[in-house]
Image (cartoon, rainbow, N blue to C red):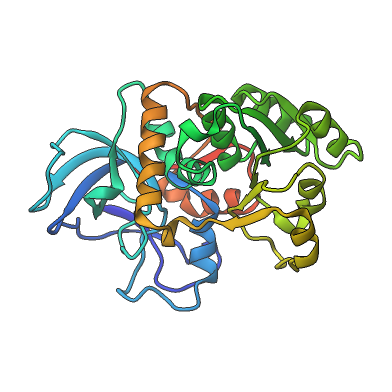
Length: 323
């Protein structure tokens, strides 16, 4: 099969497209013929920042994707060849990520994809939608009537956080930095869109919702003043991303505000909570509650350019198309 891979860590130039042996699924695994590979920040960060090279000699990048079940390992039930699936954490502890014609993954990381969903939407779900669902508590029933602030509503996680929160019956405020991004956030269903750089941002949020119950936060250090200004005792701030410079945590301010700060990383998330996020995301797709972001499509031979586009903060969703 043709696959993008890297053997050493570094910039996107370490990526190459080669012909390698098509892997066979082992016990508990499925092989998926990849239709679309989603690219996320974790993909370029892992390639460039991980301190040690791939232990198996090479690594096929990209955690997310969609495709068709092609072969099934022993002990796997609930799948048939030809089933459409979306993949998450494909490259976690696994040399076969989704930037290839085929990927082999543990069966639980391949989720049946509803007929009404495109390959692109399926390839968008793994890291972004699961992170959003996890940040929202994994339980839509608990959000009905709640007020949610989504930082960075035009990003992939922010996009799905808006849509999932609205599906659950919450009122949603989001912050953006441009009119282009504001349009995307409104299209996702946000009730109020605020430019976080505006000095009146906190007042606008408080006027709409006197107290925010939950904040889905992309940059705690940069946004903490706004977060605290719209919080009340018991507000939960859920942080899912790191910043270029690690912020100092103002413990006294957080203590006085009596807010709760929680961190999310899918790769080490407790399995029951991750399973709840998967179930909610899958149900939301089937219900037609999730939509695609503007797409930037690259061929497999252009995988380095795809990684660069994500590193350079492309607005929308970046895909590698192996076919």
